[in-house]
Amino acid sequence: MRQIFKFWLIIFLFSLFTSSSEGFSLEKPESVKEFGFFTGGLRDGTLSEKDDYVTVPVGLRLGFDIKPLIKKFKVGDAFLKKRNMLEFVAEPYIAGVISPDSNFETGCGLLLRYGYKFGKFLPFINVGTGLQYTTQHTREEATQWCFQVQAGAGFYYFFEKNKAVSFEYRFRHFSNADTKEPNKGVDPYGFYIGFSYFFN
Image: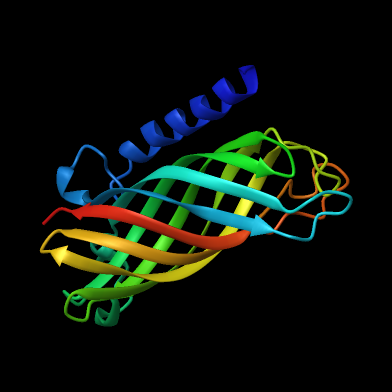
C-alpha cells in the first residue's frame, strides 16, 4: 500500500509541475480540450511458465491542446489546421489483472495524439510513455515498478458536436529500463473503448 501511495504522490507532484508550465497550464481552462474515460482489454500471451497476462483497465483521459506551443516553434501550418487534433494526453488508470493471477495495476500514460476530422469521424494515432505499478509477479520482470512505451491508432465518432465515442487498438510494452535483471518486458495489446467531451 505504501508503494501505491508513493506512486500517486509522484503523479500529483508531476501535475503541479506541469500546471506551472506555460505550454500545459492547468490554470488556463482554454488549454484543456478533452475530458473523458475509457476501458478495454489487453493481453500478452508470451509469458514463460504462466498463463496469458490479461488486464482490464479503467481510466480517465485528459487532453491538452498543444497547437499554441507548436506555433511558438514555427514548425509549420500543416499541424495547425482547424480540423486537426494535436494533443498532449494524460491517462491515469487502474486495471484488474485477471490472468495469470488475480492482481491489479495502476499507472499513468503520457501520450502525443494527432488526428484529422472527416465529418463525424476523427481518425488518430498516438505514441507515448508512462509509469505503472503492478502487483503481478512474472519471470520477465524483476521489479513491480515499470516504465511504459505505448502506441495506438483509432478513431472518434462524434454523435454530437462536442461528444464522441472512441475505439482504439493499443500496444503497450512495460519493463524496468534495465534497473534490475531480468528485464525481458511484457507486451500486452488489445482494444480500448471510451467516451469524451470536447471543450470549444
